[in-house]
Length: 496
Image (cartoon, rainbow, N blue to C red; front, side, top):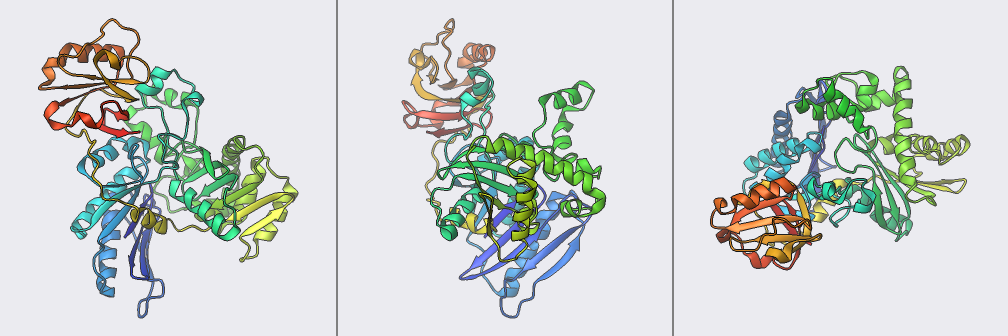
């Protein structure tokens, strides 16, 4: 079973032998939602659609979907799924596929402020799946673009090394499964093995990605769900001064995420409440919203222009996502707004795309590919790669002394001081209190926290990410002398 949760949708697919059934709900947050159950032509089964009113009740949305899945399986006489893959975005760095654990659920809860409520909804669905399918193997499938630590390199981040490391200013980029699927599609159907150009994912969520010789080099969704282009209920990249001004003028800091992730985007441009009955497609199609549509297209054209700057010779563009594939004028219009093509070229491309069978079109040296991807299959494919090997590097029993991230090679005592190193500090290890050549992070290991009171205080004063754990709970041989990524608030460590 594949579960694809967005910030306002849940898409599920159950596979048995060569057959499949899909149960979906969209526009969670609006006044009404449609639940769609599709049996894909299974003999004796009829697809159906009905309306519900879950509004912003994420638990109710999860319950409605999983109850419908259970009912569909009973009608078909299918067994309950043995493996369930859940697409997740803001789960921190790690393997593409891992088994859900309590610690990983806590990481998702910690990162929910970045996720436009995606993580909360994902955990609600996970909870319902555990109840409905208690014996299933629940797997998290990370939707990161690359399997490296970060797509965005430090030399491109305009802050000091200490700030980047202390606050974890590293971004993975998202829509990773969609990007991988697009590259596979053009390889399979267009015989392009090493695509160079731009991939434009345009649905409720939007991102643009620069690709060079088959390798992703840039993605507009950098650090949080609201980063990048304007989306349905997400503001897109905005000057930091806007959030500073909101706080300066009295906005409750706890409300800031809600303002950016639910009261903005194309709904914000249209002046519509988050629980209206108007969909994104209505805004793009109805004449009364024409000015809003133009603003949306121009704003996203700017983000597309920025992406093209990473591959200035690009003349090939892949468009995927529900809005781009349903509204075929959207791709050429965005290219026009990004100043890639003239209005004459735009009209030629739109005319060619008016034929339903047209999936690849060319005009004036520009090639546009329409790709209708199936992320459910992508989730399933990733789950099949799951090795089942337990990650032994969890520090879930540790205690965060100083929040932050660190990347470096682990050495004990004074050998662990300096840039690119993480200091492993036992009770009797040397600690260079007056040294300016600070380590990237500190791992305190001993019988009790009180043994490290002064060293933890020193770490706080110097802003060094620090974690403590009891020596009996972890095998130090797993990390000594190795390069690791350490995130102290979520108490996780990954060898690099």
